[in-house]
Length: 449
Image (cartoon, rainbow, N blue to C red; front, side, top):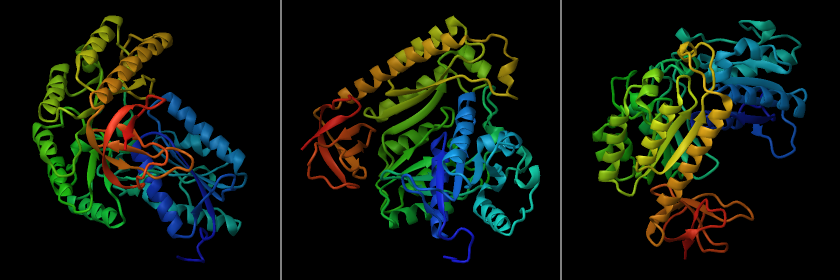
């Protein structure tokens, strides 16, 4: 630890918005800063440095990012504010003009964010400005063609699991999406590097690892390897009891992967697969790389070899071109699937996307109504999945104990479980329990001890 560093003995506040990948990257950044003597702020503590890791998947996400920056500037006056992430990449010039912002870091430079903060802090202390590319001292970089670096991340979440970033960027230019522009094209580290990080997580006491990325099934474009080979290699890492695949495109979820996970040592019966629309007409407008026939075949394959599997599915409602009859087709298709839960997103206009060329626009109220219908369907499917296992014994990995609150954990097939208050169960342990009925909030099943 360098006590002469401008970061030493400083306090840092963090705001993270968006996907699990962002949370993993922030957690890694928090650990790296702590190693340099810059500790996270505690409640009601004033920060010297504030870092916002942004999302830009929707217009609402952009607004949340701006609100977070304003709030940090208000709550931590004088703090050095650095902004990174997708919104920083897409709208860096706008962010650079916001009051209180000292540093904006594009995707290619985010691996150097700590060094950049140090440079600017040292220059500030000397009454000068650090060298920068634009906006009077605020650093901004990384047009799409320059985003080539893979920034590794294997971080412990707030609960009892690690998040391992295996891939970044995307080569799929879906009409509604800004991710290729925000995070660059698909790239990845080697399997050997990822195995080493998993081994380090196991040595540090990690029990579960969630594989994160933007399009993880596309793993291997950089190294000539495959996602299936990665799954096999990670399964051999001793000490890791569980792996979960955060999300994988249906056209990249091969039968080979499904069959391997069904008999593997540590990959859980749990998949998250983006559908986006259950209408073939809308899938064509989105430029997705599959149709509903392929999607259904993947769901049926999972259930054929893992009948107890939890399957989560992403759906977007209200995209341009989603006429009433297309949505009804989509609803009926989703209703017919043997899946466990939906993640429902309302379409948001994104500047620069091809979707803006589609003429039919869905009214905001219609979007809300469609979203509510799918959320209600999701809750029906989640409770039905939970109800199937009442009375059965399942292995549960328990999370950290939260003062004054029940101990919570997850089964192998992603059922949330609540332990009775005072139960003789150690946090961060793995145990087999019999599942009882729903708890009071109906968000978990009770463990019978």
